[in-house]
Length: 155
Image (cartoon, rainbow, N blue to C red; front, side, top):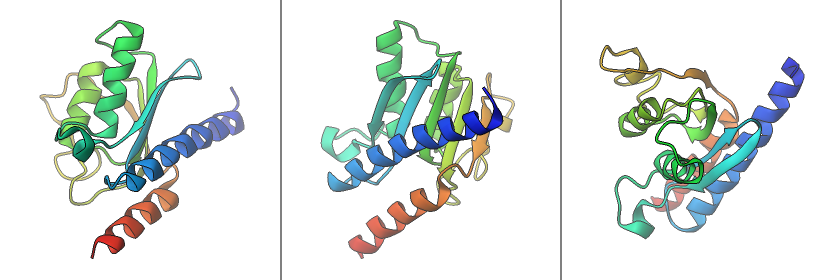
């Protein structure tokens, strides 16, 4: 795959994650969406569902990891890439590490709750057994705009 092809694939998968984030917002959830891909094929996609499921762990990343593990009948996802609209929190970073996800692409950084490039920087800690290749800022403007609009509507 050429770098141009790779960039268009990243954009397409992040666009789908953004669709999941928008759907989450429509459900009244914090607008975060995720898409998990293996060999260029979507294995799972979802958005936050913490309110709907009454489950504080029902973040988009955890939901797609669970669905992908079930679909692929494996607790590990080493040939998979995760696209998520917001920098993962510590819980999600831990799940990404335990699942052995190959690459993480995320949109907006999260200074308050992020744990990849902010906060605990989980993948840089000695307790982290696997750190994915990480690419930040894919679809950052759109991700940030969704979050800003959602929280402005709540004020």
